[in-house]
Length: 238
Image (cartoon, rainbow, N blue to C red; front, side, top):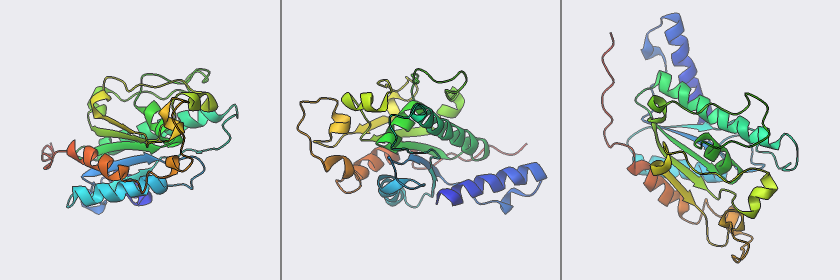
């Protein structure tokens, strides 16, 4: 589905550039989901992302939902000097995708999400804090307010916290004021990756259960609740 969503945007951009009728492009979705997969998952949205998207589709029906799997390495080489750059690359892809969608589909409401390492990627994309040690110009540029307004919700599953941040070599994050009211973070009981407290009893399976522990449904309900039931009509063409 990520390929379909991207193809629609590319076709629309080509139509504008070539002066072709806009009807030749795929219609813009009512809702767009940009989701960053977890460590070592294959390209796409990953298992948690797919379960989340499926729940959004079910709860938002009959509105249409486009999907973008964030393009970044999702590397398990946490101690590589380039690991922080990989996370920044993912954050940049999130922001570039939102900009691209809004430029072509101004009525589309965006949901940004991520799981585990991917949650950290999407957290960076919506934070005022970026990792130290990035080369000049490597940190992604935050969205201007007029584009950030199109992001209806930010949903993060199992975002690394506390001792886990040492493993990833990145700072603790907080959402910028722009996204604070739109943010939902979920940490399963016993998930030591996101608990942030080494005294919390760890459940080795908890971090891998977000697709089936019911939290994707709760997250989808939160995200869909922030999207208008009926989107306003687009402005008339000049």
